[in-house]
Length: 240
Image 1 (cartoon, rainbow, N blue to C red):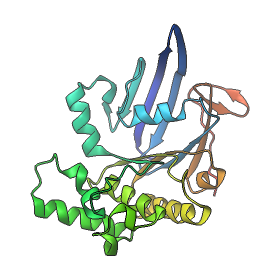
Image 2: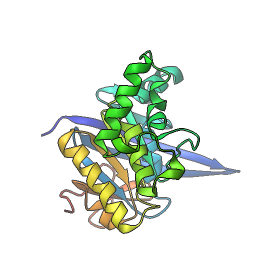
Image 3: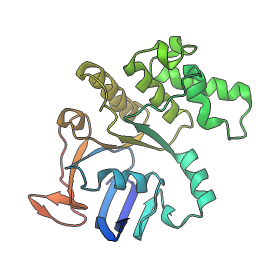
Image 4: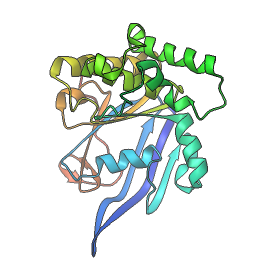
């Protein structure tokens, strides 16, 4: 058995909408081994993105534990959680969130500006990250000067620049055409295989999910197993 990197235990998450309380995650349990590439699928409102936010330290559970690499991040103070997130997690979203006035290299370097690294090392790391995603020759280009697929690759380079253990990808192909999406997913597959990055992805696209090593289905805040809702149960096997 591979070492577990992500261990979500009995997690409950609720949101208030006016006078109503909405249960989003209901005693959810899931384990993700190190170097896994797992895709979560399910209908809107099933809790997929909420789970991603908890694993990535962007939100906290109301109950339960989110243990990453042996540390229960749900109990971290805000400042410690922010530092942990910057060091251990890279985020790739459907929206590229690039700064239009900055070059590709400057956008990639943004996560490092709050570190103690010197300017030359920051630039070197940004250049290396752009090389990994095949955009070294676009380092000086601004977002308006590159294609949507290249913008998403810049976003992936930005997620990689701090050399995180974990990549969180929320609908990363949502705004891309099929060919561009396949190119981007192939890149994620290579990052998982060759750089040993653990990737947790949410997608509605079965073709996108087929690039993952495992596909887990969610509904009503639980994992779905053989047509039944059971906490902590995952579908074994992968779509290839």
